Image (cartoon, rainbow, N blue to C red; front, side):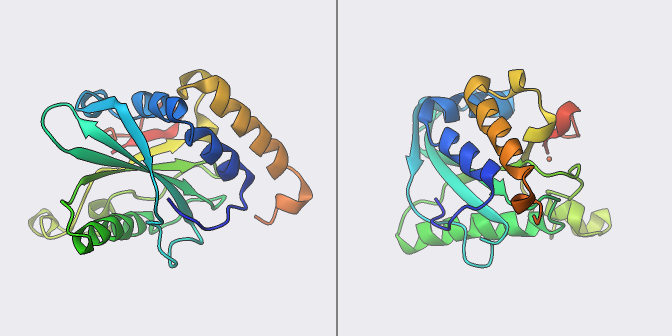
Length: 207
């Protein structure tokens, strides 16, 4: 969990909301693919301490990291919920996510721990429709013969500004945070500022 100060009002309110375990559980159930949720024992969901967003990423991202046990066999999975600070998409978000996951695995390696699967979830609430590639294989143009040499992983992108409150998951809590953030961002002081195989409606893109 990043210790960097959060100045974006939407990030602050949504982060506070998702720090509440029942809200986080509902959010994960709603926005991760059903086949992924089926492998997780969400009754074991817990918030992890520690800053996994390094200094080079903190200008764009802060995170919450949850650990959850697997249903099928012993072991856990980490779900990293990352808050995109910018009002428009970051072109190299795929590279940032790869670095983020490596940060987690490096910490586990140094501690002598088993490396865990990391599921990155990017929350975006910008003023411009999301267009950035969330996969390294999409970001790097290469023929099929070379794609196997490009590191890749799926990313769940949730554009909160484009999703009706009724589909957010624990919507009463999260939508209040979103509305308060919109009000804060509309003031002059703040103006300076993909887990499916395709793009779904409401810009909820999980690739």
